[in-house]
Length: 476
Image 1 (cartoon, rainbow, N blue to C red):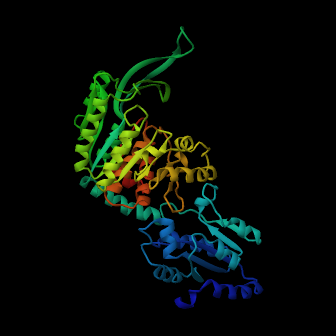
Image 2 (cartoon, one colour; image 1 turned 90 degrees about the vertical axis):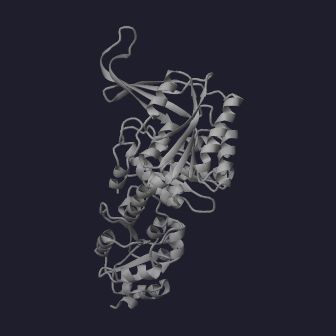
Image 3 (cartoon, rainbow, N blue to C red; image 1 turned 90 degrees about the horizontal axis):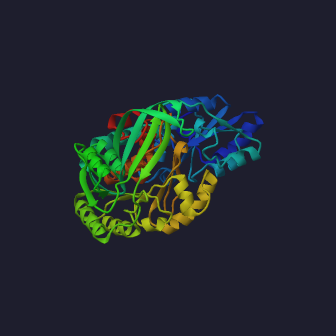
């Protein structure tokens, strides 16, 4: 069969369907964007063909690929994608459909088998067409996974390479709640006679910049320039934080407040088990003079910045006034703004490019459950209305991320399969990578994909961790 005769409209395939049924031929359908066709596609299509006699491959039109994947896709136009698929021996027919999912095409063709990728098998990703297929007596089958072979991974690697190579060109302002993370570690071999608690024989301690300072550390680790603005007290923790920042290349624009305690989080660990954490902090509002000085240093740093991160840990520095002022200044200068939120009132972040809450923060802001895909989708419209035109990138731990934009469908990014050592600071990593990518001009969906990969790396390490460029490239 020549290539042109393999390309059919849905109407033409529907006319052929009755003949296949009469001849007892088993029809198999699979579909996808098939942008940047690779060996994984070839193997999966071979697997699909083995399930029947006639394999029909549906491909998303250019319009629907843009709707699903973002404005930077497809890389290859639909006519060329169709031609490449038709050239494969395992493929009998190719058709283009314009809807975002294949429900209508399946209702028309009623294939005996509908094939999906292995990533849909565990139910974590929706299969809206399942009911249609089961309703007419068809079956849904999940094709074997071919590790390392996916369009998204190949495109991500190409984009990550550009991100890593170009990061040094950008300068990011990070403003927010800075803190010092202290880790005290040792072994616990007995219980205290004073109370039923373990006695930890301390063998060492280490310090790391935390909160907004960890966002800055992640940005600097990627090779970008960064200025850190926040407030510290004139105390031992503030001095130690200053020493930890020395030699990192992070621009220090910290404002000292003699009336304030530097936020210090101390974690006591015995072996691999954290025993307790205690916090020393002052979460009250800033004195007016300190607030004015913080705005001054932010305004100065923003002049040379290509993007901005607001890191809100609810420690009193990032109030509504500072948020709205800094977002307005950055937007006026045409610079992207990322907000890692803690306030339940997301309206204070209105106008930022993207806000990056976790599920718990999303639920608190919406005043409704958001613990699974269904409840999350119900909670989002109210939040998008309150923050417009900002986007929401909801981090979901082991379930990846979901991106919600004004006037667009949800975009879900599955988590990378990793062994989690510590989730501390993963949100900081997300904000850092997003800021660099957006400052370099990457579309938001691409930037979210990069951030998802980086967060998967950060949680492999105990404590806060600044992701390294080399490990980011190795991840894909």
